[in-house]
Image 1 (cartoon, helix red, strand yellow):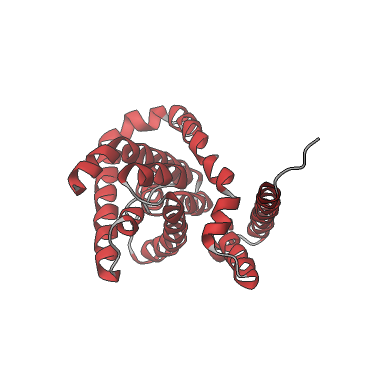
Image 2 (cartoon, rainbow, N blue to C red):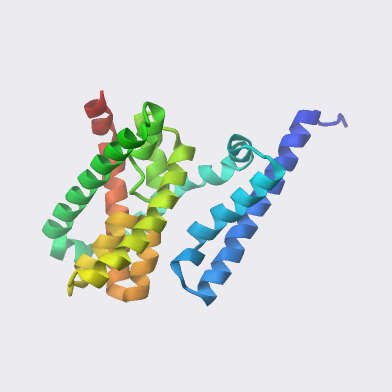
Amino acid sequence: MPALPANLVELLLHTAAWSALTIAAYWISKRLYRRWPRWWLSPLAVTPILIAAVMLSLHVSYQDYLHSTKWLLALLGPAIVAFAIPIYERRTLICRHWPVLLIGMLAGTATAIGSSWALATLVGFDGAMRLSLLPRSISTPFAVEVSGEIGGVPELTAIFVVITGIVGGLIGDILLSRIPCASALARGSLFGVGAHGAGTARAQQIGDTEGAVAGLVMVLVGLMNVVAAPLIVALLR
């Protein structure tokens, strides 16, 4: 039996090592978060920090890491299909409140894209970097899809999404502590539109209704952005 080429063996070893490390870091951070549910211990916050620390200590570039774990990112594509389940389960809620949900999602999407464009201009991002930042306020499976459609770099978009989720969850808590908001629908929508997955997890801690609304809005905003991606491209051109 002929031996495998050396470069293929090296690629397989790197893929196995970095994939195992990523999964282990996520598993550890998830157990920590279950025991101490603080936003700074969420898997979205801890996992990237652990991976980045190992990469820096070994002098591994981000591109090399992405090349070794690309299959994990590819799994996000099929995850989009699974998002149809919560929409179906909460179809009664959608039918009852669809006008206000639609207005909120449109306003939130426009604000997210506009603020992303302004932020990119402020820090000097242009071209693919700017386009990678635009979908930062939707959950990762949808954001990666939109980024690829409009000419961004999906891997960079995934990082921007994580940062937005962590910061959005923190800002959401601050806003709710200072703004009187008695509506569970409004509280859930705030986290679902502004902080996607991380926000949905925080909304679930506040209440079951808030968590359900946040998850529903997160999915619908993601689907809305995927469908509108060609229109976004046309407007940017």
